[in-house]
Image 1 (spheres, rainbow, N blue to C red):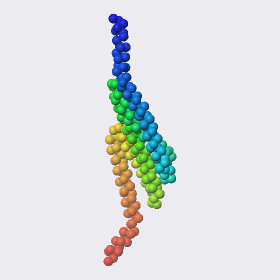
Image 2 (image 1 turned 30 degrees about the vertical axis):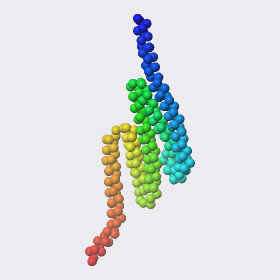
Image 3 (image 1 turned 60 degrees about the vertical axis):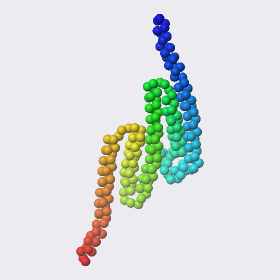
Image 4 (image 1 turned 180 degrees about the horizontal axis):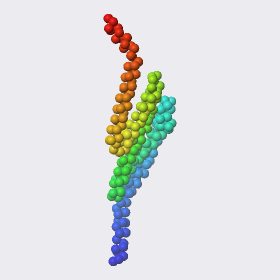
Length: 215
């Protein structure tokens, strides 16, 4: 009787393993297929972008400096590869009969694409921000550098908030504070520009008033 009691947990464990075998086999097959499919698609995307001269155009336009001179073709290929692989991985976890562990794995795998999406948003956002601020700096106007710096800071904070929101962080309070700060900056700039124009046009306005009253 004692021997039977000792063997019973082992028998249950073996039965659970046998029951899980079909799911493990299916999940393994999906992961293997997904790995090779993701490799192929990532390679295709990278090669297409390289052959179209996308990296050369970015380098020529000096837009790649926003991402440290890295190859956007390689980055795009890598992101596509992992995105596709994670899609297969999410499908594979549904075949695992591991109860709570399967549920946790599924939640993790379905959340990871949000991280990739946030990465894509941040990378392309950096390029756009760098392009916009560079254009502002080359404008022949007073305070162009200061305006470019303020624009860059505001845009980068916006990018970070958008990326974190995509990942799933709840940042309502931070967003509200940021909007108040941006509103204050915009108001201050508007006042500064208005005062500057007022000072610059002071003499013209005085002459115009004199002409009106001299008639």
